[in-house]
Each structure stands twice: as C-alpha cells, then as structure tokens.
Image (cartoon, rainbow, N blue to C red; front, side, top):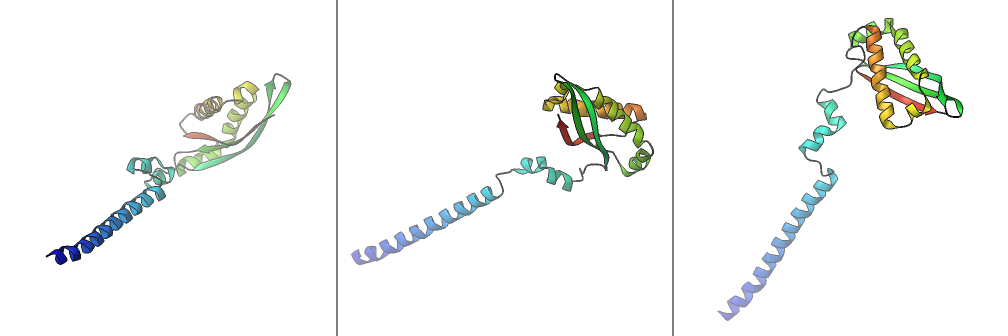
Length: 158
C-alpha cells in the first residue's frame, strides 16, 4: 500500500499541474480577447459611429458649398475667415429641389459669416452655435426644413 500511495502522488501532482495550465490558458485567452476587442460591451458598440451606420442611421445626402472667404472684425482691424461648409439634407428628393435654391442658401451663409467678429470664432461652443444659426437661417430663408446639419470642412481665421 505504501508503494501504491507513492505511485499515485506523482499522478495527482501531474493532473493538478495540467488543470492549472489549462485554467491559466483559458483565462489568458479570455483576457486577450477582451483586450483585442477594446473592452467594449454591447452598449459601447451601439455608440460606435460605424455600428450606427450599419444599423441604418447613415447620414443624409451631403451637399458641399464652395468655401467662403469673408472679412471679419478683429481687434487689430480687419481679419479674414475662410470656412468650408457642407450641408446634410434629409433625402435625395430634397437634394434635387435644393439645387434650384442653392444660391439662396449660399447668400444666407455669406451674410451670417461676414457679420462675425474674431471673438465669435474662437471656441468650440461658438462654432457649434454658428452651425446651428446657419442651419436655422437657411431653413427659414428656404421656407422649410432643408438642412439637418451644417458641417465645417475647414475653418481658418487670420
């Protein structure tokens, strides 16, 4: 019996070592998978813009207005503002109608931009407010909700 106990001791140690190695491998693989996936949960995937587009939340048609260069008031005298503007419209039918009134929209943007001072263009909050004002002004001038979002593709002050 004494010999039987001695022969089983190495086998049980070997089994224990094998079990520990397998458990460590499983934990390591799970950790690596979590790390490679960026640690995102299901909720995080919904907030990802690419995931939103796959669910049908794609932006509407985008209309690029040619860049605007205007004089603006500056503490040092006259400054310059160059802004690239792109408009997001709700659907393709709106695009066709918008093309007929594009110059009216450009005029609204130009009039608002040329009334700015350099202080109005400094912060992110001011730029977001300007985007909203431009959207509202264009929609008011055109008499309906043509524009969903105003996007700045370039924004340079001097």
